[in-house]
Image (tube, rainbow, N blue to C red; front, top):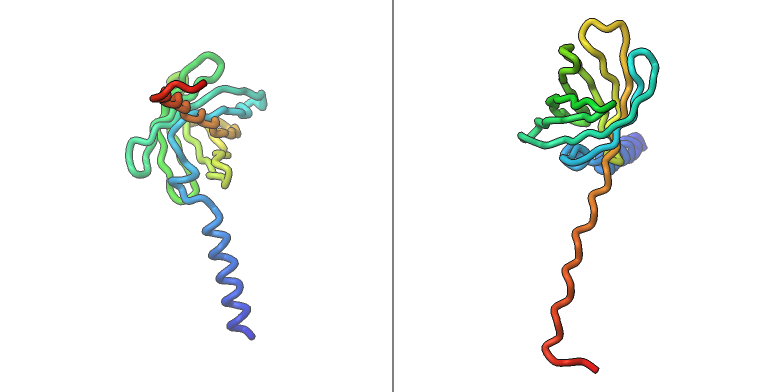
Length: 141
């Protein structure tokens, strides 16, 4: 009975792991919408673009409040860590990769007395345009 319980628990855990997207699936290059809360509690929105440049490394550019913020990141398991520079202050953040592809995390700037929060939501990629059907070789009437 104990073996059956352990086997069932192991299988359930395995299926749970298999159901979670692997980091390469969850973390992808492309566009993201950004929603967040600043260190002072005010909310912000923007966009971000991630570009995979290595097996686990990415560049990231946020566009928030009319400013471009450049950074780099690394995925490890289901975590995505970033470093960036904003107004000559280095910043760091850590996100958790969600099953739906969102990145949910916290961030701060070096020396700050608190953290902000942020969610990056993947922008659906447009469907490839369907090429027009070839012209018929014989006239149709």
